[in-house]
Amino acid sequence: MSEFGQRVRQLREEAGLSQEKLAELTDVHRTYISGIERGRQNISLLTMHQLALALETDVSKLV
Image (cartoon, rainbow, N blue to C red; front, side, top):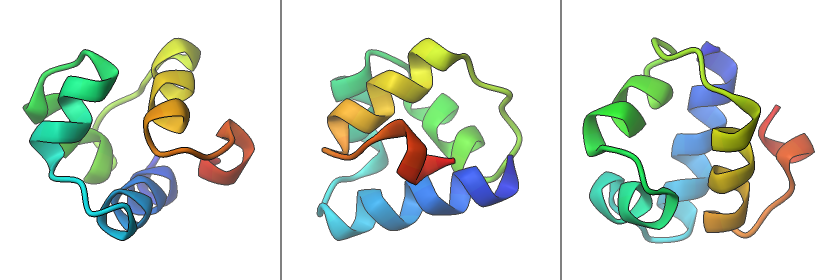
């Protein structure tokens, strides 16, 4: 989960998105995004898919 979170953060920052904006794009709360990036959230496949869409990447690149 930690590596996944680090990858999400890296891609989010490269895309110039704040945690708040990424949360809006994925329809989750900002604190949930923070938890994902810190490796503290065990997320669903649906959320992974939403993150990939928002970050304009494939789920496989997040994992």
